[in-house]
Image 1 (cartoon, rainbow, N blue to C red):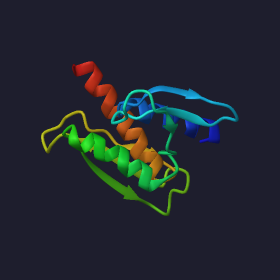
Image 2: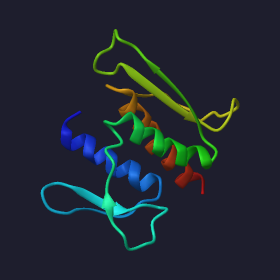
Image 3: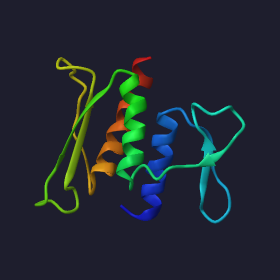
Image 4: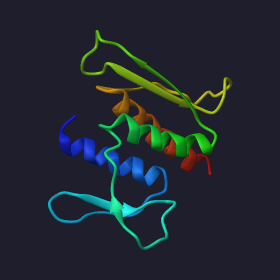
Length: 122
C-alpha cells in the first residue's frame, strides 16, 4: 500500500473506533477528537496501519465491544505476510481473514471490516 493508502486506512480505523472530526490540518497531518476525548480537544491521529502499538490500542476498543482476534505472520509472503481475523466467538460465521504487509496493517483491515459488520447489523 502507498503511504496515502495507509493514512486513509488510519482514518477508517479512527472512525471505526469512535474518533470524530477527523481532518487534515496542514502539511498532511491528520487530527481528530478521540472517542474518550472531551469533545473539543483535537489530537494527532495515530498511525494505526504502521504501528503495532497503535493497532493494538484500536483492537482494545474493539475487544471492549466484544470482538476477539487471531493474527498470523508468514515470512514467505512479503506483500501479504500477515493476516488478522476479528470474530465474536467460535460460532461466528462472519469472521474473515484480512491480509496486509504487516501485522498492524492486517489488524487495521480486520477492525474496519468488523466495524462495518456492526453498522450493518445495528
